[in-house]
Figure 1 (spheres, rainbow, N blue to C red):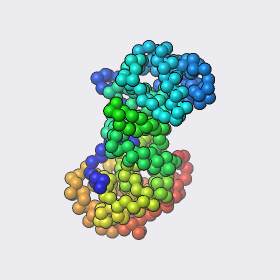
Figure 2 (cartoon, rainbow, N blue to C red):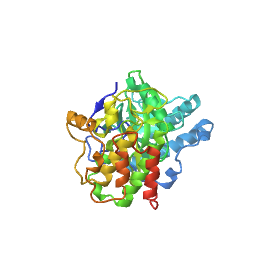
Figure 3 (tube, rainbow, N blue to C red):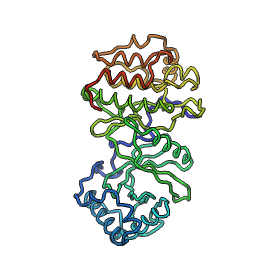
Figure 4 (cartoon, one colour):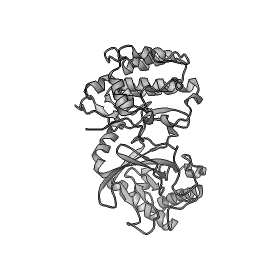
Length: 386
């Protein structure tokens, strides 16, 4: 049975730049690299060059990209640039042709000072050493460098024992892709140093998660409206197939332009699959879900998102449930009475108040659906671009 917690732990798919700093250094790693235009043109090497072009031509492209990496981040991952580029070119071609991911480290060859992962779809990722900046439900979050896009990305490494769970999560996230849902760049499966099968997921870095915002009041009302519309769009998408079961501020990611998405599908339950386990984070969990020991979950996510929107639009209001003792929160939520949402403060006044109240109905039969909540927000904010 999955655990029901009352802590805002780092999300399994949470990849933010808030704490992206290499251990033992004073260098903060930027998610955007400044590289020459000729290197940007590499972007993703065409499969034609990888599969059938002269190996020297592919090696030259890799060498150019490695030079840009070294220049931008003032560190080289390799012992010998030319020999390493040729070696990587050969490994890349082999991975694509055999359709197998490949993990390279010092144990494989003396050429490399750090780990490198080559994917079967033609990507090369270079590890940043000692760059762990988060632990999730099933994964550790580290930094890596996407050689062909010349961008730093998040590398989410699943524990070997959680390989099947992670593969299921990848499949779920890909199925739910759309506005307001985190996007997975790519994934790879390889054998680690201990001979165990392991999965790595690569995705863009996000600025921070919603719970890492130091002052939500700094967000403009237009920005909050955009975030609400994006999240409700993602929620409507998720509800078509099942339940997320762990929507909370730590699982809401924001990019540099404050575009928002829902992440961490480790507790997702598909409507077609019977799963009545009690899981998630208690602070953001609905009364009927707790009172039914996890069986009544159809509108759990709507409740959680209602609390998220209250947290977003009324940040000066007192804490409702979060950051309190577990048993206190459990008893308070399970004992909520009809109409409780009319008694909490809504200051300053905002047109989203009626929608939030509909989302926080104690009786799920009277609670608005995810789809109708999204439509309601579109009616409230017709001029907001999202």
